[in-house]
Image (cartoon, rainbow, N blue to C red):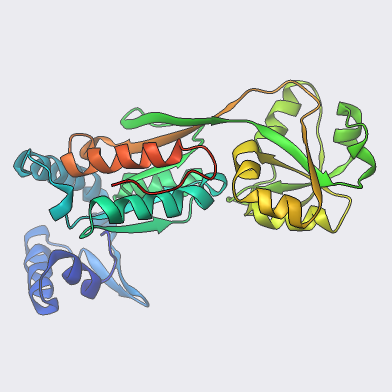
Length: 294
């Protein structure tokens, strides 16, 4: 279910492919269902497998936690940790988490996934992700959550843009904007804030990454809104290179909270507790402070 591929499942289990195929044959006989069907890239679960998986996965997690040694030594840990992080923090967090993990747990592996709120929630539910960091405006009850960093949105434009001399709310909503959203939806956090005040803005382009938005506004009269932490970190070089200017939004906003989420089934697992602490520490670092520590 996690790998959707018999060969990768065998490697993950430390078994041969024939052994996994034989185990799958026995599971099919036990369940009275094929469980998995051949697909172009491996296998896909049947409706029966999808129906039993949530309870099966929860039960396996409980068994795994109950037999996991309570003494945890990161130096001998061989787990592959699966993690997704929002684009505005990824430029810091990907390197910081990888280097810290490498220094403290050299036998462990890290696998990053592309983040959207919906994809990360689905991945954690399904078990293909261990934890994720994003904004997550709404969460299921069984999901654990921890705040890791607060942030605020700012407006970026060309340094010679006519609005750089006087950015008012009226001029802000009258301008055309580049919206950054990994999911490709037409509304973002800033649009939600504007709607509470009875305003809308014109979205000329929707992109998935903040770096793309900064490059676009550098060559146009479009505006974009990005988190302050992004500008202070990786975006700082793009701001300087493209001669961009950043300003506070011309209306009252809330600070945003980046949250780390994980499933109940991994909540008490010693290795994952340790990894989540590493992630929280790395993601809360001020921009430019991604030096790994043992």
